[in-house]
Length: 315
Image 1 (spheres, rainbow, N blue to C red):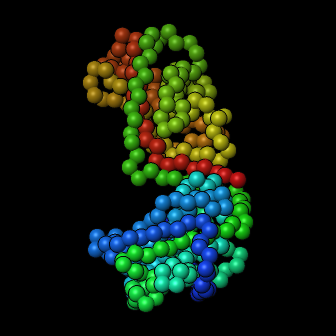
Image 2 (cartoon, rainbow, N blue to C red; image 1 turned 120 degrees about the vertical axis):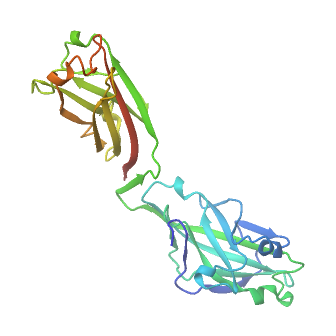
Image 3 (cartoon, rainbow, N blue to C red; image 1 turned 45 degrees about the vertical axis):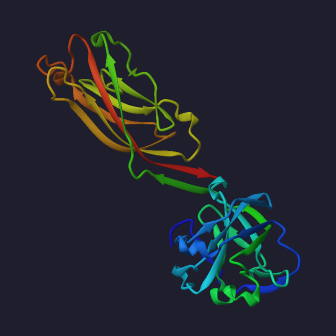
């Protein structure tokens, strides 16, 4: 079963009748048979509010066949926007679903036996009744549920409790990540005298980045150039945030296409804000006049970056 789809009530529903209409929502469906005619297997009502949350009624006019309920009308209550809940936040709600007997002006009422309520959250948004009523009983005009091809359903929802499950980690992977390119041109390279030179800060994927170059190697290793990708402001990341980045850093050969490059995949975070190569290239290779890595005292570095996932922690 896919995440976010319905979960069926394990226990049987309590059936009763009520003269009072549903307190929170009424759905009047005219020309009910047209739903099946147009192959509408699932109909979601407009949103309604109850208990401080927004809900929808979900109707399967020909039953939920994946639950072997093809001979029944299936009806469910769904949270309209579960993504608005913070990860780890749960809402326990009891609910009743109504069907009007138009002959006698009373409602058939089904409610769950779980008196403490069903648990709604971001990954479980829907509860209800696979076998709300048989299509044979529903379609019999003597019962008054479907008259002149019209029916009336309704819902009541009552919040029992709300709570957080504690600390929750959410990992969001990107199926088809976009690759971004940035180029950093360094003029007057031989006049650089700082231990670390940084590119201008640029934004990719809601985060700020920079390229760092150490002309004489990071930590004074000597004889090498160090090259790294770094988060520009790691201190602003929420605790527990990690960003999975696949990136390539190239020192461009301006005379030919023999670029010098390194490729990596790394989880960036506030505690691990940079990654790259201590010994990216030797001075001997970099300063070779026939390599084209330094031409007229200009060096060009190209970055390709794709964000493949991000982890957040809540609670």
